[in-house]
Length: 498
Image (cartoon, rainbow, N blue to C red; front, side, top):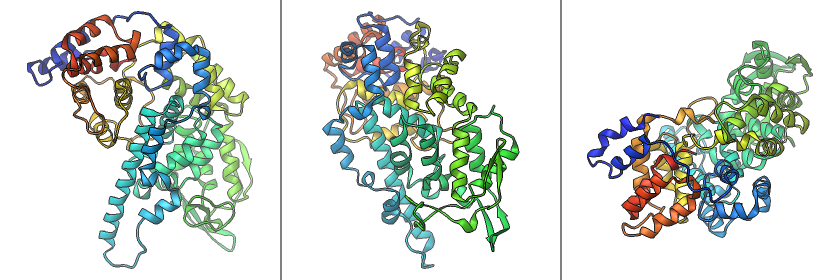
């Protein structure tokens, strides 16, 4: 990476660490002292957001197999009291989708001051979305269930709601809590169904408008919206290189007609979802060569199963997981073995990950280091490494927007990229360096920092990062000392790559 040409103009004093970083980024990377098994370092670096104080030593004491097994069984890892207290202080995090609508949604339409009422509604939705972002960051920083947090991030991007869109903005947090977190390591079909039926997805991706009007049991007027069906097939399941044809997208859109948002009308309606039979296409359909009988809501369940169990879905999802955890160009053989596990277990994500994390490829030396961190990973790993529990993560959420990754606001159909290469932008480095310096100096509210004379914090941070920190970076940080030394580490190539 040619980061040095971007840092050169900063050496005049705009950033105090620019000159030192110019030398460090230009120099070849050096491995730190191998005091901990490199496989342990790789597992901690990939299964978590990065080590907190003592993480590497704890993982080494447990052993590689036990550490991976513990992360694959997050329900057995108790959450720390400080995290539970922090989450309890976010009122909207205790509310489900329906209650959020009642508490923060638009008032009953009386025809008076409608524009002002909607502006107030969106203002309230901003408050709820900020609490959702704060909760996500608190969990990512403080929870020992690091793999579960990384998988929550993965699935929230895979099933991205896109940028703000009406009530979907109000429900970004409840979507994560209700449709993603419970299934992040479970069956893919359950996750697919939960996301497809959640009001946030129905609103954000316009499937609530996908209807066929009926009269006397006969379709009389179509208002098909192919957007969600296209997204579901081309990105969330089969992938763009799958066997689907335009007719399959049409058929899926018809299958999903009548999926609406509102009060429950039948036992099958829950959580703000309801099925309106009068707005559903009753005809039989064919999806990917398989007949789907016109049975109403049951068609949707059948269609989601067809998609979830298709080999193309296994390949698409497994390749993306390998990209997320290992490398932008994962070995074909590894992806094939993961896809085989996916098929044999009925889409059990936990077992797919077990196949990945137990593979020889996952610990191959050529995949260690060299990946640039996303802004979210940089921010969370930095706060974790410093070891001071945050008192508020609102400013950190704002910093992520400045770094180019505001939570819940990805533009593309797949959310923010799972690959590392898209984040490898030299022009973004000044902002990354600035964030590191601000965090080290305590200029990010709610996150503490390092006092200017606290030289022991440089040693503590170096100990936390262990062999991932090279001798040149360590020496430069010790020479700088205090917050300057800590900031230098947090902005170094050793830290910004993993």
